Image 1: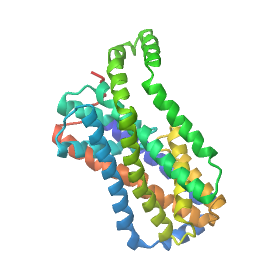
Image 2 (image 1 turned 135 degrees about the horizontal axis):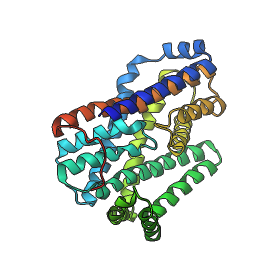
Image 3 (image 1 turned 90 degrees about the vertical axis):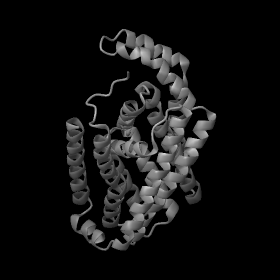
Image 4 (image 1 turned 60 degrees about the horizontal axis):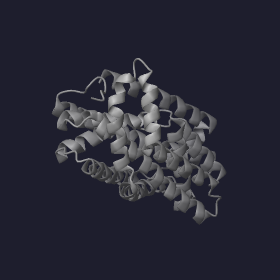
Length: 319
């Protein structure tokens, strides 16, 4: 728990530095003025839509565990899923493997068996968001090359995870590394679960749930723009949000902090034609409603899980 606390403090410090730079470069007075005009009545609607988006992703998590034949009581599982959101600020959100640690405590399922569910979540987050990006690009008459690039990365990643040859190669490499050789016995379980979750049917189901869930979050992001009086259409906001979010994931910076903000602010000014003040304010509000709201839910979930299970394991162990 102490390590998680330190990581959160570092992420918050990084966030403060990024937002200070954002306000400075986009003119503090203009950004502050835009923020002051935000329609506060939209806050419950925005956060409600974001919460529904997470509920949709929880259904995907339940589906993945069902595919893996891992049983966890629904209430406990909901708390575990919420606790995983505390790792939204981890690189690529892969820190959400913490959920697998908790699932092992409850069900005894090995981490190597359920960790691929977290990887599958990230993969279908990518495919779902790429679909929204394509919709935005086509509707706005924008070149699709950026989204095709993201799609190629997603397809390549899925192919790597399903490749038996690469799994055997990884096994040979790990056998030669003194501290990592203990992971070798778990590679077979990890590869098998990855194959199950990234097969055709689970991939389509996961992507469909992701597309609908991200749609709710995209609507919430659009309402952030409406709340600031920004003159931008729904699909324009969606395209900017999709591209920036995907860049943030690929950057592997904790929470995409800095990369996502730069992408949002730059595209809102250059592509959507917003003033620097409105673009900066919208970037700030979007990140509060998505990244930091998710982190807050995660911290609450983590406290609940800690109470339910009697503590948080210090180190994830693949056993």
